[in-house]
Amino acid sequence: MTTNRQFLLARRPTGAATRDDFTYQEQPLADLAEGQVRVKNQYLSLDPAMRGWMNEGKSYIAPVGLGQVMRALGVGEVVESRHPGFAKGDFVNGALGVQDYFQGEPGGFYKVDPKVAPLPLYLSALGMTGMTAYFALLDTGAPKAGDTVVISGAAGAVGSIAGQIAKVKGCRVVGIAGGKDKCQFLMDELGFDGVIDYKNEDVVAGLKRECPKGVDVYFDNVGGDILDAVLSRLALRARVVICGAISQYNNKTAIKGPANYLSLLVNRARMEGFVVIDHAANFASAGAEMAGWLAKGQVKSKEHIVEGLQTFPETLMKLFSGENFGKLILKV
Image 1 (cartoon, rainbow, N blue to C red):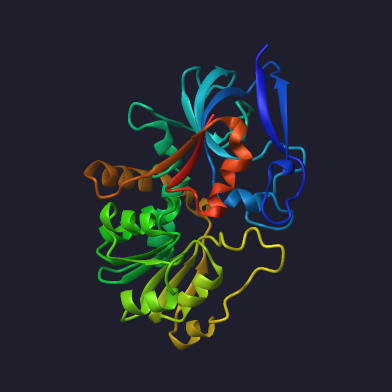
Image 2 (image 1 turned 30 degrees about the vertical axis):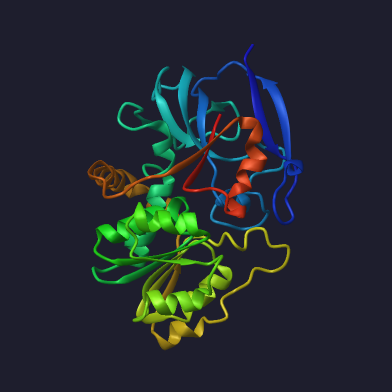
């Protein structure tokens, strides 16, 4: 009988999640019911949003229930199927969970082809990460050629792709990242026009240097002090995209809101939240355009792959310590 290793959410974390917030178990797999599939998970996407899914309360998606398998997007191979839409040997992308095998109804799953692109790419540029960067920048940020676009978390999964899309669209792109290596990567490998190293320089001073005419589009992945700093440098009719707030997810006290929000009034600017699932109807066309940019070398995707399901709790926390470089993926 096949055994399934799983990580279940044991309690709601206070501050940063730790291994103690999860229950590890090994369970035998039951027989498939009609309409179900069994997927052998190969790669799991580790995302900052997972920390929010552990919290109780209203959000854009229901929280993970206590005692449930920790939610995670992933790619894997169908090894058994009693569903008419999927056959043994198909590769799929979906909410597979932090486990060796997904077994159940394949709600929201779609097929991917490892002959077209490596499987990890379907969790980065060709997956939700790429779709988030694409729609948050182009639909919510609405950049125009010649605009100055600032990206926080710029060496991370979403930020690095969003910055490259802005370059494709003819914008001047400034990335905010932590550390010399990440900043060098943005300039040398991804073609950013400027960088601000928040770990080693004053962000406001960096913004004055790199954005002398102000910021037209700010793509925010971090929130907190960096959001406040950029708000102080907005150009007239700027657009601020709230894509994430990773600096705030592990707070034990109230989330820090923007003190400089009146800059939105003075500059007649707009600040808008973004959730990628609102754009699901257009994923296929966006994915095709992204694939074209990848093929031409206009967009590059960097994956940070860590091996071993057992490492899940510690690997997830790399997102919040800044240890990951590019899209963080767990190889099961």
